[in-house]
Image (tube, helix red, strand yellow):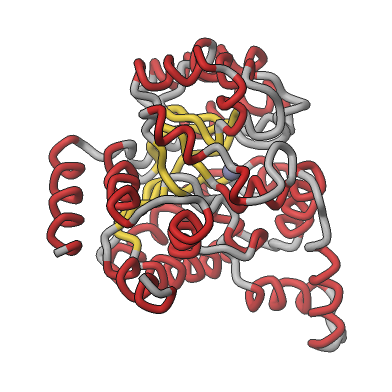
Length: 340
Ligand SMILES: [Zn+2]
């Protein structure tokens, strides 16, 4: 398939995305607005130059710092409306049918934003996206390794005190090298006891032991990235045996250069061949300059996947989601039908 035909075709295929950070679906336009508001009087070109400097990181921690700097530009909960509007445009551009998105409240709570107001905004904006596109958005709250276990516990307590159906679980993101899974076991157990789904970034920036910790200590349903599973045959077999899906984000891994320097080196192909339930995701579209259909094209053109294999990965995006079994089956049938 030629590139243009591939994009036309894949935009029409129903797809889910399961590893996407809402603060990273923000558009350059929105960042520009924030920046010019923060520095009144600055010209548009100068603002664009300054913003460009934010995007010069070359490892995971540098990226996290840039991410936090952009979060610093938010002035109030009302700014979330803009982000959800950018998310809606992203969903439409990529033909996405269902999305589970991370929202990271820690930096905003530290700035003094009211958590209840944030939750109200999430709920209202999720309903607005549904009305305008027909697409369900579900939220996983990132309890964050970066800010430590006490902060994670606080996020969970805020979440439990402000339950809404649109928030379905928690995820562990942030700096993997600074916040080991063992620090967060109690928080994850409490989340599960309260009926929340759990996922964790693991094996993105440290070795395979971190993935073992995520599945054994945190008992997560899915692993974000899981790149370093390639180091450990027993771990790969265990992921298959337990049916734990990997939320693969190849471009993100190439960008942060920790274990893979190019798409052709990425272990996604190996994981698929081992029988692990892999899914394709973008992680942070704005930061890595990649959208969901691009990730499928990259897998097709640079990572040795056939169209038929990508169809399985598309179906995996629904199978590995937190949708109920009936909806998973209906979405998979819709994939077959759209495939023709
Ligand atoms: Zn992520």
